[in-house]
Amino acid sequence: MPAYSAQALTSFATRLLTAAGAPADIAQEVAASLVETNVRGHDSHGVQQLMKYVGKIRDGTLIPSARPVVESRRGAVATVDGHWGFGQVIASYGADLAGEIALEQGVSVVACQRINHIGRAGEYAERLAAKGLIGIVLASGASAGGSVAPFGGRQRLFGTNPMAWAVPTSEGRAPLVLDFATSGIAIGKVQLARDQGGVLPSGMLLTANGDPTTDPRAFDDGGILLPFGLHKGGGLALMLEIIPTLLCGFAPASSPNYHPGNPTLVMALDIDCFTERSVFVSEVDALLERVSATAPLAGVERVLYPGEPEQLAASERRMTGIPVPERTWEQLVALADSLGVSP
Image (tube, rainbow, N blue to C red; front, top):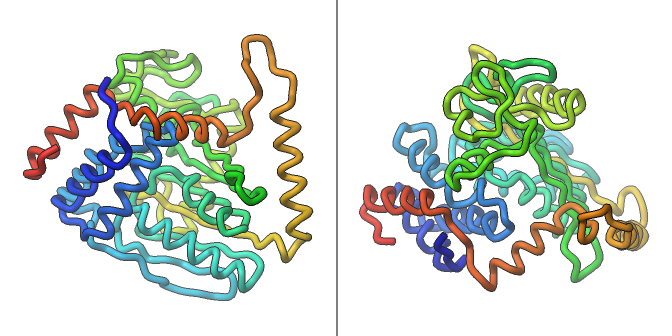
C-alpha cells in the first residue's frame, strides 16, 4: 500500500478540486480537512471522498464556488444557508458563528442548511473546544431511503447520523473529542474495508435479504447497516433523523420529500457562564488521567479515552506518511486523468 505525506496529498487534492471548479481558497480548505482526517486515522472520511465530491459537482448537486451566509439570527440561534457548497466550508463557518454567538450569549445553536457532506463531524466540535468552548455537533444524512435499519428491523430507513462532542482541556493538551456514527459502522469504513479486501466485525451489516454478514461488498448489493448499541443506538439514530434534519430544513431519508445533503446542527457553550473555567479544565484533566490509569482488561495494552487513538495515529502518520489503498489510489489517478491533473 503506497504512503504519501500530508503535504503532498493535500497539494494533490487541492489541484483536483480546483480543476473541478472550486476557487483556490475553498479547494485548499476542503483538501486540508480531508487529509487531516486521513492523518487522524479515519481514512473512510479522507481523500477517498474526492470521487464522490467531484461526482456531485458533475451532477450539479454540489456547487464548488458556493459560500455560506447567515440567513437569519435571533438571539442565540442562527441559520446558515450553504447554497449547496462544500460541507467542510459551511460547517466550519457555522462552528465559527456558533462560537461568536456563545461568547455573546453564553450558548448558541446554529443550523446549517443546504449543505453537502461535512466529512469528520468531530472537526467542528474540536474547532470550538480549541477556542475554550464546549462544542456539540448533531448531523444526519444518507442516500434516498436511508442505509441503516431501525432497531429490530431489516430495512434501510435512517442515515448513519453522526454526533460529536468536544471539551477543552489544559493548555498544551488536545481537546477531548467524542465522534461517532449512530450506525455500528460508517458507510465510508464499509467501503474502505471493501477496497482493502477485508471483512467487517459481526453485528454491523445485513444482506439485502436480512441475513447477517461480514462481507462489506454486500452493502453495495442493497445491504443494510445496523445501529450500534441495539435499542440505544437505534433510538439515537431516530432522534438525529428528526432534530438536525428538520431544523436544518431537510426531510428524513425515508421521506418522499428527501433531498441529499448533510444537515448539521452546531451548538456551543461558554464555560465561564456556568462555572469557573480553571476548575472545569482541571477536573477534566484529572478525570482523563484516571481513565488512563484504569487497569486494562486482559488483552488490552492500556485504556484510551475518546480522541486518543486519533492523536496516536496522527503522531505516526506525520512521520511515516498516509497509507492509501491501491484501489483508492487507482480511482484518484483516474479522476485526476479525467480532470487533466497530473498526480
